[in-house]
Each structure stands twice: as structure tokens, then as C-alpha cells.
Image (tube, rainbow, N blue to C red; front, side, top):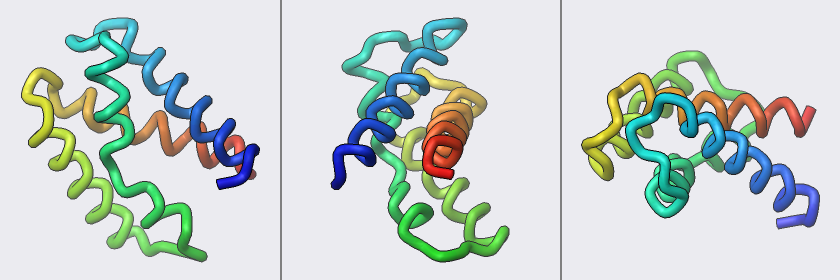
Length: 94
């Protein structure tokens, strides 16, 4: 991983973690960061393109992976963890 990729990944994780500071049931870095890192993001980032159906399946499968690891988060927070992370990573790369 290049230095730039490492910085972008770290910033996206920090931004995602920071979003949990307001209203999320879990706030501990040791509890949140593993959930942020759980989805298989490379399946999205390493592809040239992805169809809407493929993305929807990837998104749903990874929300369920987070659900299995932590039963304290409602589904909207699990979705938010993935969506904020993707938003920051994609925004910074483009």
C-alpha cells in the first residue's frame, strides 16, 4: 500500500469513527475500528466497474457481517459505518 493510500485509508477510518461520537451506542475506538475494517472494501476498490446489483449484494452482505460481530448497533449505524467510509475514500481518491 502506498503512503497516499495509507493516509487516505486512515483518514477515512478516523472520519468514520468520529461520526460515531454523536448518538452511536458504541463509542470506544477498540470496539468501532474493527467494525469499520470488517467489510471487504477491496472488492469495490480494486474493480474497474461494478453493477448496481453487485454493489447492493456487497453492501447487504457486509452489513450482515457487521451485525454478526456486534449486536449493540442498530442496522442504520452499521449502514452508516460502511457508507461514510466509502464516501470519504472515494471522495479523496477522485
